[in-house]
Image (cartoon, rainbow, N blue to C red; front, top):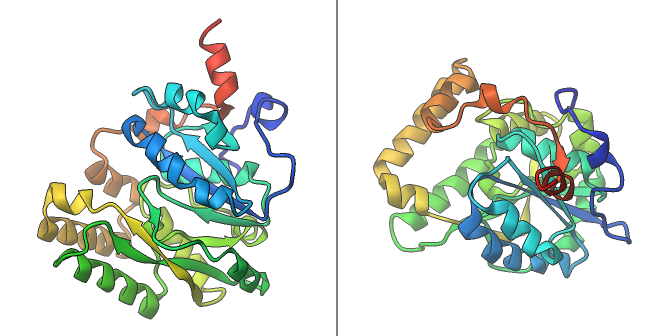
Length: 272
């Protein structure tokens, strides 16, 4: 993770840790999600009750997320700031993770069943990794068909998206060199590298994700756009070019210069 520039403050005392070394570290990247933060953090306490460490990595949001995170610091174990971009944020969280295993989740994900933490033992074999069955919060047609199609694609091709909760050992993640520092398709790139090691294991749980993308942009339009982006990526179009179409309001070239800080250090530096 050579591209991560971590300041001493985040490496030492200003990063909040839990006293007992966790078995699982859950890494959640967030950006401009103040209105959804509290409900999501409350939901993910189900993982902390199983002994997991919860790491939130914010991409220097400007919408009140920091105030919400600070006011609810009892709901997370570490909170870091890094440049926006899921790959950079997840790499930051993984770098500071204390658990033997890593689980990467999106903020709008929800577990319909208890996470099967006992199944993590299966990831001790060389190159083994896992993901969750995907569900959408709207279960009527065509959303049920979309979810089934994504699960079928992952089973057949081994290609897994971030909505499905990629899970692997920290040692394997470090060996592979983490997520590639690209603004889009980072989950596809990581699962491509992982499936060259071993086929993916589907965990015995369902991870429900928001259907807001399909509802807002239209089902047909969203499916066509996602497949078109994926096809272009497979044929060599750079992730940076694709990100300009997918995230038109984010300038990643400027955001790249942001340092990695703990939330406490950032708030202290900006109130003095």
